Length: 447
Image 1 (cartoon, rainbow, N blue to C red):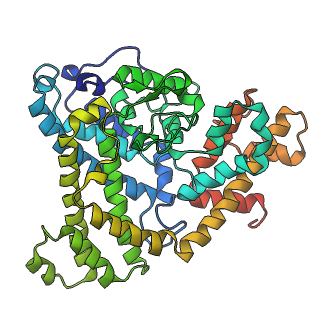
Image 2: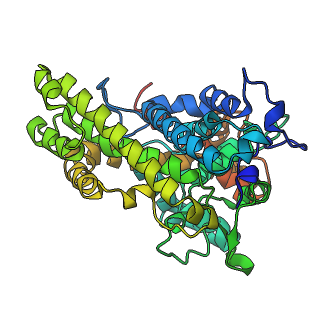
């Protein structure tokens, strides 16, 4: 893979290429990507979607929106740091094509901003709730009417694939959805493969999947424009990640490792003295002891350690990327950047305590249970109504249910897979509170 193609400014939905030297420096194309994402309704809904604790009423706990903004900031720093060195290594990118180191930061920042845009309500438990509706719930009735890949898309509903759908799906009068640059779309794609065949490997990009059947053609177009390397054959052709995806992933890893841990402390799920010791172990080589000891309040001590920890990991991630850049571009680098971190032992310690004290806490588990019931009820209600519509067996209740659906949701299509995906995508875009509100209305709990 070569950087000239990987940095494509062409917009999804365009028929012509865009050259870097012709860009307006006051509103660069990659920066426009960021603007379009942040003004989208799908991004706004992240302000009320779970990061750590579902339906939290505590203002200092992160939502998917604040998490995404922070990942974007870290990603921008990573991209700029890497971009500066890459332009020194490949000077023609600047001299011939006009690329600047900020371009790398802008691409990674935009892709990182969107990295959770496809996540349903209630976090990863929401993904499982949707999948199990089709795998073992009432949705199993559709298995015989779908292709194996279509059915697997629903059974293993994946927020990453849903995100690519949101970023690229055509709507009436709107070709290419947000019409982002191919470079940003490529950097967004963590798992450039379909739901089937699974054939898991130790390669990081095979961990999950990122392409619904409905967006297969769209992704193929993006991958071809960027010159992403392929491997496998026949129906098992897979793509190598865009190199900047490793930076997007590292930014996410850094933020959830440090900031979810910080949320656990603020929620009282992790004792402060215990937690600060873990963070100090991470930054022991960089901490200014005198400055740290002068801080009187827990909030300031925690803020100092958090900032120092993030900066330490940014520098380490950039180093790892640059040391392995050629292998990454060849598709021969098979793990996330932080797996190679010299701080891996400290990172693993922090993640272990977060799993035990935060992600498996009683408060989180109880609200995830609520999420399961809410999402599966909403799916069943809307899918039953649309199925009855196509079977000419609509009840008066079904007619009322269909009026609740936004006009953008096409339930009249005869394509069963598209219809099910449209309903599922609609529910996935709901915020946590909106999903609960709608559930309460449909079950007459609030009148």
